Image (cartoon, rainbow, N blue to C red; front, side):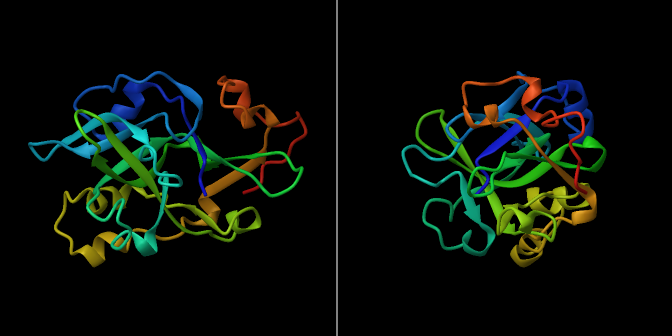
Length: 212
């Protein structure tokens, strides 16, 4: 399961990359856990793109912060969920045992945009989940699953901006190519959600090898 993400990109850069009308109000974070806010891009009432902070996971439903792509049409919590993009600079993964955590990113440190579903949860509160898919070759060394990272070309289909059948929209939910990803071990300080600083995603040591 994807349990931790990060987003520290400049809001103006986010707006330019996602074709938003205005820069989102977003405070950088290097350690976002379920239950906290993430930055999501949704279709607005005019069919354009708007950014909104959503709580990651339904409250108090356990495990609602991830949803397997294979069950998005049958899982009661998210069956009626609307599609969104969850904007990140990458995420973290853990192997079982004493090994350090790993930071994961796209090559060239480009934005790592994930497929998400969101739903209203009463009043003005809205929550979201990250859709997961089977891991690619690189990530399978750590976890059997990974978030559904979407290439720029797939954003319109997932958001419903271009005509697409439900099957076409779900077709973008696939393992992201290993050759456009990298991972590296980081300090165990990221295990504590109270820690939130840029050093969390830095290499564990100056000689740490980045795997790609």
